[in-house]
Image 1 (spheres, helix red, strand yellow):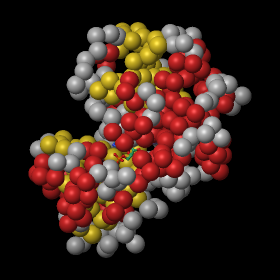
Image 2 (image 1 turned 90 degrees about the vertical axis):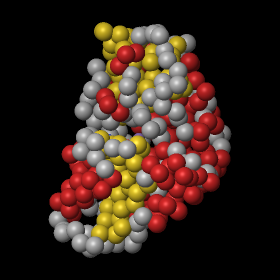
Image 3 (image 1 turned 180 degrees about the vertical axis):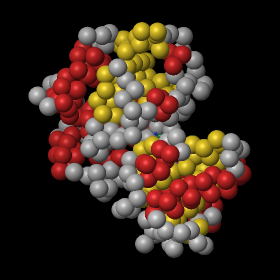
Image 4 (image 1 turned 30 degrees about the horizontal axis):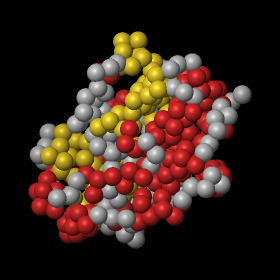
Length: 332
Ligand code: 5GP
Ligand code: MN
């Protein structure tokens, strides 16, 4: 048995031998963490186990079509008076990505950490970390196969959503033959793949378009046209009524410009709190750059949050690190 198989079996034992679980999706949840977490919830239901699902904040409306979406407790508006001995984190690259949740952990907590980020620091007591997986949802798929959990239309919908969104609609370089095999198998459960794609990839809000207009206006192309930077200020958020959810995907406009290697997107969440999204085309490992700033992610898509800096200070800091990573000088 290889190490992946044995990690999958350990994870199966973790759920089979226990009864009640706390499920955690990562902060600023995306389709992969949400789909994987809801797939886990459905699998636990099949095994007659009980669970509570939490996220530090709200889970984007776009995922409301997923089964058990309504069960996700938004800890920013609801509190839970229970501690858990068995916790499962899905798609969280490190313990900080679970958000402010440790008050829900019993002193003798056991934590199953299922993730595909190469920067994952194995913070669980049981870890299934597969950097070669395109999505945590792909690990969930493999887990169902390895542990003989039965799939159904609802579970398949959740897993497919994670695969679809983390591969950018099966376009990114992480779209392997195995991803396509898994997607193909999931389609046999009668899932509505066109509707999932429409909801997750095609639909945009009016606020998104309004904030996008401002982000595009802010575009700066530097480093000999290798770096494209856009930003959204706190004022932009207020004036367009946009939320964090509405800025999803904007970073790609910069990265997609022909010849650009690194796309950067700065959002001023509040004064002195700047979220940075990194995307690269082919050579720069942006996970390493983000990691230097306390964040992480993947070689082609990463992020971090900088505190105590103005937007300009945050840009200068990131540009300096990107200059080093590119090995070229920055010039306007
Ligand atoms: P996004 O730019 O879409 O928010 O994130 C891109 C990728 O970077 C995702 O895989 C996400 O999980 C990861 N990421 C974003 N922000 C952080 C962060 O603050 N810490 C870590 N470790 N990963 C992050
Ligand atoms: Mn993921």
